[in-house]
Image (cartoon, rainbow, N blue to C red; front, top):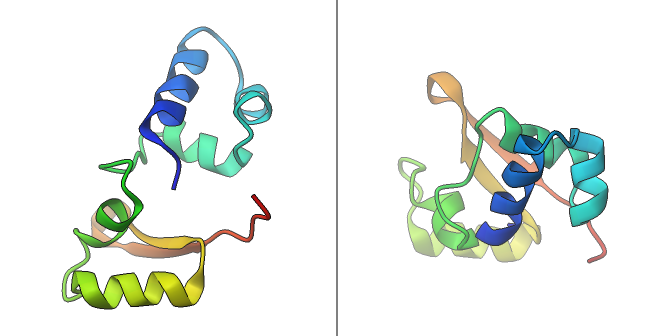
Length: 93
């Protein structure tokens, strides 16, 4: 998960006219992530555990935490029409 400040910086750069590729380079984030933020798919919280687990029906925080440890960098995010997406990031950072 990215800190709230990074997301806000991306949105600010976008409002100043920077494109998604430039924003991704400047902030060191994947372009696809910046693209998601630009279309409104912004996590509810900068806290990874809360933003990725507190809105998934039937998935308790303990299980979600364990799943997160198992998967590494990833989260379950809610998308339009109640669809959930498991996103896994393989980043050396």
